[in-house]
Image (cartoon, rainbow, N blue to C red; front, side):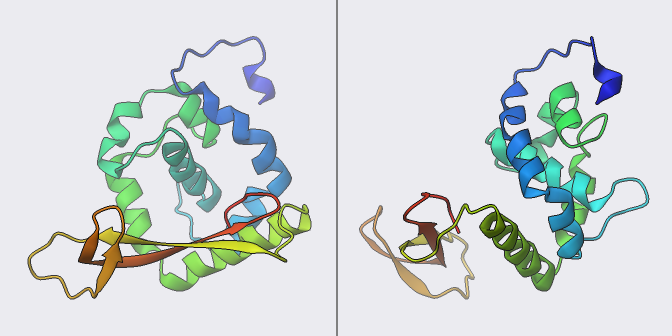
Length: 169
């Protein structure tokens, strides 16, 4: 970061840096290492994690749209890279992760956040949502989709929120 002193970067997405102090407190690098996330020869695991996070923070819904932000210097800097990885690299990395690595990532995040006192955990709010699937040959079960007022094939998701801090567990 010292190399950037005195430099100016123009970006429509500079707001991602509002999360930088929180990520430093949380020690996102330690979370990625403890979760056993893989890195590549060129891009370490922490930088991939920060790349995905940057896209989520700006509301990017699909990896295929990462090209829209390929030359945004702020997003690359946020991820610790000169630019965000390309769509193929993001997709390949995403598919290389197994269920245990994702579960470990979630556990490590909660563990580090708890150490910071962000979660009390004595009282939580639970919210179930159905993510509809519109494919013809779906093997998914039907669940109530309240927003649509009917049962639909889809994945049932669960959100758990700490009622004191309002943070998602």
